[in-house]
Length: 444
Image 1 (cartoon, one colour):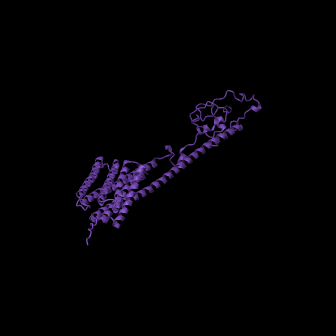
Image 2: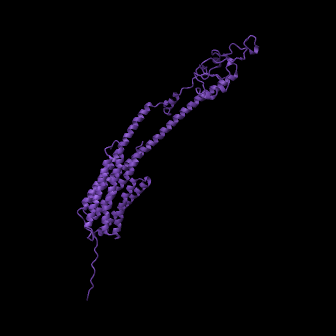
Image 3: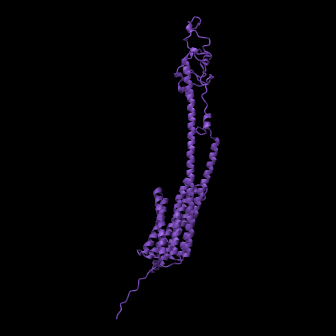
């Protein structure tokens, strides 16, 4: 009985069996989540700021997403395992170099400060050349290693790959971490110097501030005492506000009937602004109004209502010798009362203005205090987040290098190392945004 020959079973890639390990798939799913989160944050930052720097962040996140998606496609045999191995190695290589280069560019922006003037553009260009040159060299060495195995059905391990990848990760990760810590220290030092200058300036301003600065500063009592009340040149009467008619009558060269008091001559604007209206200690008034201490005696009217010869005047026209001390005119008293009220109103308005100035100053101080507390709380929050991000970066560096060095080509160990790389790159991306927030929060 003849038997039909059977074809040999198809060769199964050892890499494919390792990819289908549930532990490897779970690690790949976690890496994909972190990569997608990094990509979304990068796109959001680029949409908010639209600069080349944040476009570079987006370009560093895309290769990680491609590598994680390629892992899932290789597990379903939608792509070859050889292409998966190439993509899995080269994509993180590009992402770590890009992140490190962006950190160098970010650090160079702070070179205009006094803290890191030594970090010149030449030094920045040298570091960028080293980072990207090492990336190109590592990519070239890895490509040659895969070309040497191109005749094989499945790629196997190569003696050059592990040292090249270890050297690349050590250079880019450690350099990027050092730059992140240095940037944080520089920003914190700038903040400390700014607060020190602010305290010195505030101390000098308080010592030299006075109500006469014209800025509404000072306390309410200082505002009240700084503005002198209107002081007429002639002596006040008993009321302390307006000279009596007897005082005006006793002035040299004046007559009681030569001082016609009108409401218009004692308007409120003259008492509120005596200097503006020519009523002051060194001005004369030629009109019908009364000026305070004129340079020359008041003019005497040529047509006096009192006859020159009092003895020949009618009885009703005779003036008592004490008429200048006890005026009988009720209209004059009313006019003096109006003028007194206007002066008191002026004093009240001045007091109200001082109260309003004090209230406005107090309100501004309260608003500044609230804003200062808000900025201080924001500074504490951003500082805590930045320290947490730096801690995660340190864990990612140590965990990634250690795991990859000890895995010895094991697929699960390599994927754990890739997960640590993403744990490092995600806070490294967030760190740039936190540094921007920290810079804003230091403007106190």
